[in-house]
Length: 117
Length: 110
View 1: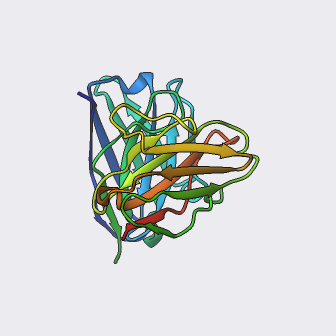
View 2: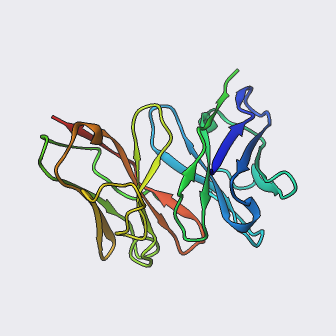
View 3: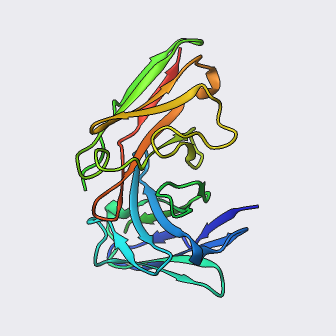
């Protein structure tokens, strides 16, 4: 059974850092495209970042230079390192699987990141 | 990376049909058949409903259908049921090797 379990969210001050994790089971992270998608409170979905099976990474303009996506193949886990956090980064962060077909077939339950002083 | 354009809300009575539009550009919706649709009831994670413009994953009722013309994709839900009430989002792959979502449409079943 495919499962994605996010963790690492919490309250952080503006300018701070946080690392999110997404533990996967039932499939191999490195064989697929993996994305982070976020949703600010009461707002719509916003794509954040992707790591392709070949290792290439891409980011939304809103997080470029501040966020870094990575994966640990030995742990079958996806990460999102978030630095220089801003109030507008407050959101539920979801990880999502893409079977290299450019759509997201499985989503985690999400982890809430709150950036506030 | 501008969001795709969706109507903020649509509504319909049980048994009726509704269509949600999703307008992008020649750099995303218009360039690829890589448009997908997601259903999100309140407080839950999104669920894939349509992929590659018009394909339904296993388990999604055939009341849900998708199409595309030029830079605009559409999701049609026929035979509306109360359980269909949710937020719906379209998404497209882009020429920048990234993804973009629509702003979301709240479906109300009257």
